[in-house]
Image 1: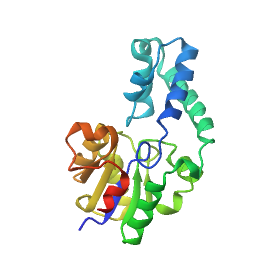
Image 2: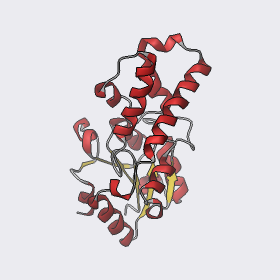
Image 3: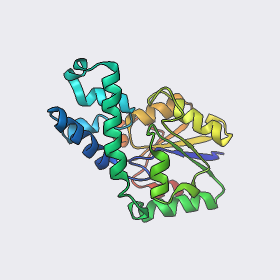
Length: 208
């Protein structure tokens, strides 16, 4: 029996893509670099430094390693300031109902996210108490599609990977879950990949 669910955060539990976009857009505009929603979509599910490389494109070679770290930190400050606008109202009724029912059924729940701001987001959205463990960017050295974050989450839960279900909206996340040896469920954009064990249209489909 699958005992535990491990959810990606951005795009599955809450939607922060627009905040990421605004943060990267502000940085790109300051640097005089073209940036749009299409480019932003390539940053989904990958680490901050990898996202920066995507944003900078050919301009990445113009910066030293220390300058790149500073630019990533600058974007994160923009992003964190935008996150202060988040609240419980950013969580859909469908998500809340699903989390409550899964807890009621005795499942352990965890977050497996490459974001280093997962704790802030969960707190702002009043979701902290729903999750038994959080594995995020502060716990890992390798971002998705590496399986590290999901293996960390399983370890925090005290569960074997084979007893965990990963719910992801990014292809890199599905690849990560598969590499971890977990059952994978795709939602949103990840459905198009066709590589997940199951596809769902909304989170509450997990209850069926």
